[in-house]
Image 1 (cartoon, rainbow, N blue to C red):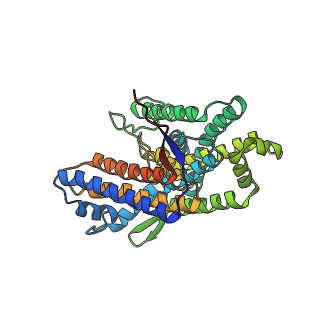
Image 2 (cartoon, helix red, strand yellow):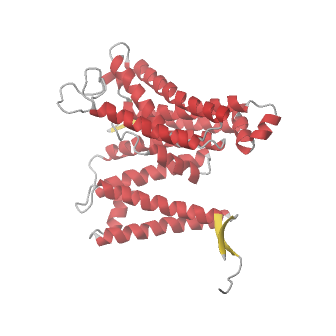
Length: 366
């Protein structure tokens, strides 16, 4: 007797039920962990879902913190969806994000006094996009010309760039303008004032320009995929490369263009995050390169759904951090555990919504 996975088609209502069941299961599992630590699960979940707004004297700061998680996740997920639609498995979001953040920082520190804030931030974003886009160009070129495995190539880029930023952050030297000069131990320096992202002040709340830019990017990507020739070509190449060639399309040009754009957007997200934070760090990505893969997958590469899922996962991430800060029994690592439980349960629900396990063959007596 053998077990096989078989794709299945279920009604939308059934999928919704499975997803709800997955979410409820994650609440139950998380509740068991919380109860074992002497924490009331209902209180924890209340603080998590409300991102710590209840009883908070500075609610605007909580919303700002949430949006700082939402913006890079949304842009990265949209960028990965572009490549995934073409069946180009770009797993290098982490490396491309770090590349963008590093090159944005180079511009911030070297051109700090030469131009006004708006122009400097624009140059930072351009440098970040071009540098990360170049990585996308190389991986796409290798894939089309030499049939390399893009998953392995982009995965290795993640580790290369991770060690690059670690080297920068741990090396005190005359050339290293990324670090504070007044600190004996290696500490990343703050950006000059005119390299830090600004926003609209609404009372005590500051709406960063990055939020508006991210929403504009989502709209542009939606129309790019749905209403342009380039978007149509991406769909054709994703469905069948041979069909694209038969129709006279340049697979090389389409692939290189799309992956360059995908990586450039992720680099832009890195620049946004660095500018909004006013510095870089070894953990600046907050794992958006990996989480973005999950968001794109769960959203079935639909731009509107990506926006919704990105916001929900951002609420989950920030809410877990906010809730964990209220209990001495746990630290920030428990927030990561809770996020893992929720994401695993939702992915399990997605799996059972698309596959079923069947048995084939018969048992035979020995």
